[in-house]
Amino acid sequence: GAGPTAEQRKLPQSRNSPRHAANAAMRLYVEAAGRTVPLDVSRTTDAASVLRKLKRRRIRCDRLCVRGRPWDAQETIKHLNLQPNDTIQGLGRLRGGCLEHQLKLYMRCVHLFKVLIAFYMFCVGAGILSDQSIHRAYGSVYIFYGLVVFILSLLKPCNIALGHYGSSRHNKCALLIILLFDGFAIFVQLIIAGFFLADGQYELYGENSITGRRMDGCKGATCTEEESRKLRSDCNRVQVPEESKYSKRDCDAYWASDRTAGMRLAWLAEYSQAIRYGGDEGKKMALDDLQGKGMCCGFAPPDSCDRIENDDKYPCSGGFEFSGRDLSCEGVGRDMLKQRVKCSPKLANWYPLDKTFSDEAPCQAFADGETAAVIQNSLGCRTDWGTGLCNTWEVTPDSTGCAVYFEGLMNGKLYPNGWMLLATVGVEGMTIIIACFYCWKRKDHDVLSTAYIYEEPWDPVKEGKLHVGLQEAEAMGGGDDDF
Image (cartoon, rainbow, N blue to C red; front, side, top):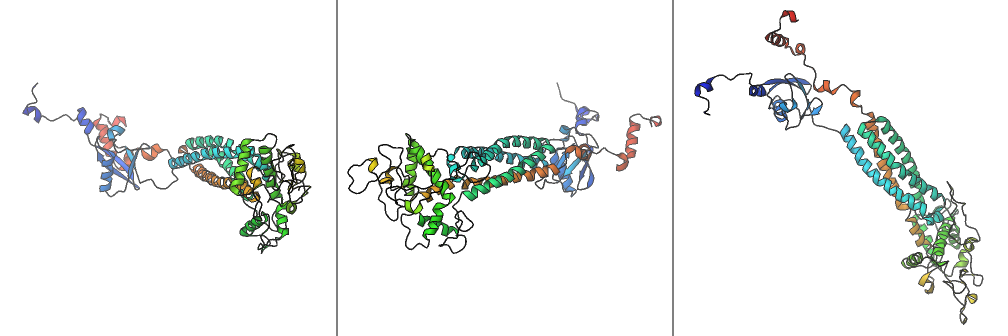
C-alpha cells in the first residue's frame, strides 16, 4: 500500500500509456479568412482556446464549425473525436437577415399573425353574412362580399399549414403555392377593403355623387367634407336654419338619394322587429337607446313629411347578387315598401299611423280639443316611425330625425373593418417577400457538400509533408514492396 519510491518516480513514463495518448499533442488545420492555418493542440483543447490561438496570429474568426455543425464553447477536441490533420472551419459573425434559419423564424412569426387574421376574417365574414341591416342599407351585394371574406378565412388555415411545411422542409413547390395564394388574397382583400372604406363613410354630395346634381350651397361641383356634413345637419332639422346656404332643392336631392333610401329601409326593418307583431323587447330597447343617445326621434325630422315625401319604390333585390346596389327588403312590411316616404292622408306634414295596430298605435296624435282618443280620430304621427318616449317630446324648429346619427352607426360596421383588411394585406405581402427569398435560396443538396467545405481531405502533397507520410509508413513496417 506504500507509494512509489524515488527510484520508481525517476523511471521514464511510457508514451503508449492511455493517459499520455489522451493528452498527446496533435496538429489540426483551420480554414479561416482565406487561409489554412496549422495549429498544435491537445485532446483537452476547447473552442475558446482555438479562437485565442487564431487571434494571436491576427486571424479574425468569431466561431468554429466541425463537420458542418457549430463547435460549442464547452466542447473539447476529445468530445468531437477529432483526429490528427483534421480540418475545421473558422467563420465570421452571422450577418444579414436572409439566412435560412432566420427566414424560417420570420415565416413562423408571420404564420402566427395569419392565424389571428384568419380568426378575425372569420368573424367579419360571418357578421356581414348574418347582419341583414347591412344588406338593406348598402345592398344585397354585401352578402357576396361577406361570403368572399368568410371563404378566405376558411382557406387561410390550409395556406398556413402548407406554408409551415414549405418553410420547415424548404419545399419550393409549397412555397410557390402559398406565394400565389397570398397574391390572390391580396388582390381580393384590396377590392373588398375598398368597398368597405368607400361605403363606410358619409357621402360627398355633388354632380358625381349619389345626388347627381350640383348643390346650390357648395362652391364646387362636388361638396367638400365639411360642406356635406353641414348639408346633412341643416336638412335633418324640422326647419332649415335661415342662415343656411342650402336650398330646398339641395335637401330634396339628399332625401331622394338611394343612399338615404337604403338607410331608411334599414330603419324600417329595425322598427318592424322591435314594435310589430309582438315585437322584440331587446330590439325595442336598443332602438329607444339609439334615439336617446342621438337626441333624435324617428328617421326623418318630425312634422316634415311634406318636405321629403317620395313616391318612388325601393330598389329591392331578388336575393343574392354579385354586383349592383339593389337593397334587401326582407323583414320589412309590405305596406312600408309601397313607396319610400308616405304622408298622413289627414295632415300633410305628419307621417302615417302604423295600421298593424287596431287599438292604439305606438305613435298617434289628435287634433286640438279631440275628446275621443281612438285610432280612427288620429291625424297621424308627428315622428317618422319613432318609438318610445321620444314620441312625447315637444317638437321645435331644432328637432331632428335620426337619419344622420343612424347612418354613422351603420358606417361604423364597415369603415373600421376596411382599414383592418388593408392592414392584413401588409402581412400577406410580408409572406410573399419571405417566400420569394426562401425560394431563391439553394437547398443543402444543391451546393457543394458541407463535409468537403468543413472537412477537406488532408493532402500531404499540397501541404508539403509527403516525407512525413513515408516515414510513418516505414515506422509501421512497410517496405518498398508495399508501394
